[in-house]
Amino acid sequence: MSREIIGHGTWLDKVAFQLLERERSLGRKQVIKAESGLGASGIPHIGSLSDCLRAYGVKLAVEELGHKSKYIAFSDDMDGLRKVPAGLPSSLKEYLGFPVTSIPDPFSCHQSYGDHMSSLLLDALDRCGVEYEFLSAAKAYREGLFKREIMELLANAKRVGELIKEELGQEKYVEALPYFPVCSNCNRIYTTRAYEFLPEEGRVLYTCEGMEVGGQLLKGCGFKGEASCVGGGGKLSWKVEFAARWRALGIVFEAYGKDIADSVRMNDRICQEVLDYPPPYHVRYEMFLDKGGRKISKSLGNVFTPQVWFRYGSPQSLLLLMYKRVTGTREIDVTDIPRYMDELKELEDIYVGKREVKDRVELAKLRGVYSYCWLLKTPEKPRVHVPYNLLVYLAKVAPRGREKEFIAEKLRGYGYRVESVEDELGEEIEYAASWAKDFAEIGEIRVEMTEAEREAVRELTAAIRKEEDEGKVQNLIYNVARSHGVEVKDFFKLLYRILIGRSEGPRLGPYIVAMGLNNVAEALERAVEQT
Image (cartoon, rainbow, N blue to C red; front, side):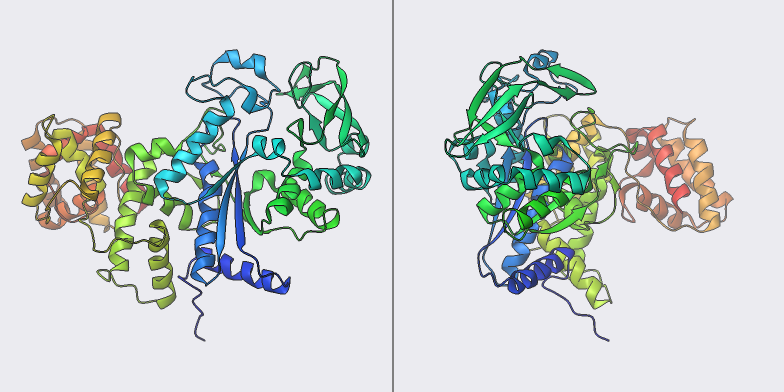
């Protein structure tokens, strides 16, 4: 049976198709609005950006299927600061519980802490070429964007509390309102408990009792007062806030990570049963972990930011990380960037027909992923493809001040058709030069080996650790190949494929010494272990 190819054949297209089918079943013919939240309580990381890029990818896929769509980037900058993220000044402790937009920017370059953190994520979106409508929660509350939803939720607070208890087992909102006023005495938000709603006045009564932060209680100031439900006097609890903004903004798609699955499930019910609005179509994805298996987190201090990625890799390589698949947990760190840079080049070869893929569904998917990596604006002509590790090597040995000219000259000598380094190749050289400056590790390529080749690589690995002379390292390769009955030219090709991703390259003796004997040995060891 012939398998159907939807759109460009990727998971994005499948989600867009299912989303549109759902909208048709609901009888709606509106602009398809996708949303993602921008966390503003700490330095945004790769996981934070994934929410945005995946939502935008679905927006593009919807448009490819012939429907109007919009992507909204919503900053949660009304949230209170629960803990001081690792690496930030300890002086921020005095602002625990404050809305992040009322905390001074510790870097003194934005109006507030929250503005600074939001700007980092918006910078990443801009560098990726994402088109978005930005909304600030603080501004939205201040201008009454959620007024209707707030009034309905507070008027139905008893029902809301029962749903939360039923769904999550939490009894807090059976008595307290799902709304946090900003204390007019101490300026904190999560320390307050709203206990009565005055619908005719549009206000709530509250006491500032305290909040739990990192297992410890942040004491409230004890103030008792009343606050407006509109005009920025407070915010809704997360248990109901998603639902409020979904209806207020007309959101029909939002992806989410499994860490907030309970909140999303709760908001879906509130949206449907209290606000009478069908909740958005969702895609749930797994989290990015660091190489130690921990969730990448701004509070844990293992933050891998988009800005770090852009120092060593292109926006398209980062989009590849997000778009190649959506399911499954992935361990990721900086050392993966060279692999994604080279994988993007492999996808371009498939896209332009230089590499054959016989399965038509797989071909469509790979071509589609490549297209989405360029946000459907693919280059008009193929680019010069140079393995990342080769560029790193050349950057290491290039004379300072004329790196690009030197590298271009060497590449021409290796048979690359380099016309200019003022284009994408020039950018790749800059990425590789940054890598050469900051790292020594080599990102080896996985290749298949015979048993004789595997034993030869093992012997060479042990031998090169003890030899620093370039000429002697070169001779070692010849001698090891012959001693294991491996054709010398085949052994060189094997080493090139492992170390730089193609079958030829610079003279291996100087390359191995320049890249570091231990680094090369470790790369070869990993290559043997993977086969």
